[in-house]
Image 1 (cartoon, rainbow, N blue to C red):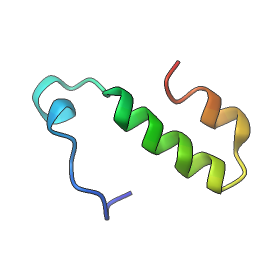
Image 2: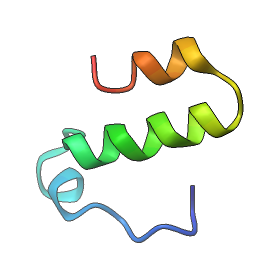
Image 3: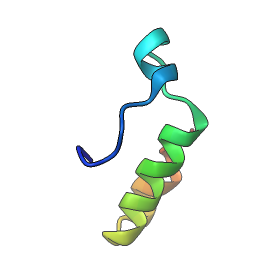
Image 4: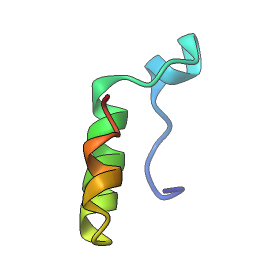
Length: 42
């Protein structure tokens, strides 16, 4: 999702923050990928 600004937490630590996972989960849900969405913050 290149249209979103980069996550400062991820840039500094290399780890995904809860917001990163939530964004990926919503993206997966919008594309009908329910199983992948459940694993975005797991």
